[in-house]
Amino acid sequence: MKRIIPVCLGAVLCASVALGQRRAQFTPEQMKLIEEAVPKKAVVKPKKPRRLLVTSLCMSGDKIIPGHPSIQPGKYALQQMAKSTGAFEVVLSDDVEMFRPEKLKEFDAICFNNTQGVIIRDPALQDSIYKFITGGGGFVGFHAAVATINQYPKFDVWPWYSEMLGGTESGGHPWMPRDSFFIKVDDPKSPLTAAFKGQGFEIVDEVFQLQEPNLRDRFRVLLSIDMEKSKPSRPPLPIRQKDNDFPLTWIRTEGKGRVFYSGLGHNPHIFWHPVLLEHFLAGIQYALGDLEADATPSSKIR
Image 1 (cartoon, one colour):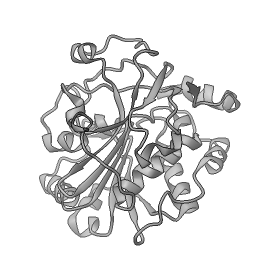
Image 2 (cartoon, rainbow, N blue to C red; image 1 turned 135 degrees about the vertical axis):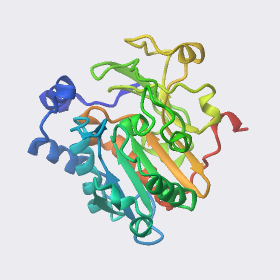
Image 3 (cartoon, helix red, strand yellow; image 1 turned 120 degrees about the vertical axis):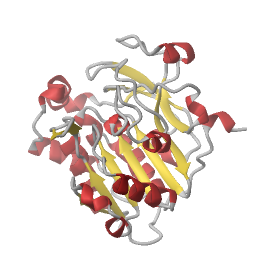
Image 4 (cartoon, rainbow, N blue to C red; image 1 turned 60 degrees about the vertical axis):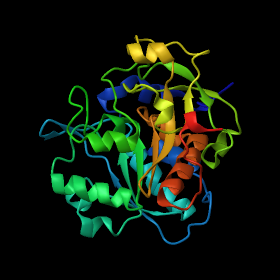
């Protein structure tokens, strides 16, 4: 197994991990790292011009909060990825009115970039997103997207959102931002994991855990934690202790729509690693409808 975090990141990486929720500033040095790391060409040629709506809205109750330290790097990485590959156009907006039907029809997919809390309360907006995705639109989620809408301890705000995404987080982190763990490539034949060349890797990041049983009945697992090489720093949920299964990246379909989610992305350095960015680009192009991939749930693969 290789380490996917190169030593050359040095002080920049150490600072971003250590600062964590103290909101590390997004620096020119980090911008340069992202510019150098983003893929320079699309995984596949887009079938038509594509547009991706990206929101990074974070709420605590009725208040907007800054959210994760990786939000700005994530937004910049998506912008630079779009610019360098021509695979899609990025529109950044934290205005929930962008989820009205007349607005969403201008996009091919939406991205929740480390969103957090109940950001969509209006039933009309919920219905608009539901119809957009089930009607053929795409959804991309990074890290705290799984801690959005139905966030611990209230899991019944909008149940369909968690069904669409694949599960609900539990309110605990078996691996904290400074913890390292090993990742295995569960689906090495998928075009979404081609960048890893079938090789697992070690990484430092925070991990959410899902509370549902039989996770592999719900989605196609691309990456998961290699539990033979990794030990959580905090006790996982009983259900996860029982099955020892911690999926990190997956795809699934919802109606006619396509869903790509990666649990990676708490720490800023995730968004300037070239191999992970290739993986994210493939996931985005899948959600946009340009990259074909088998989303059959892992447990049903023959």
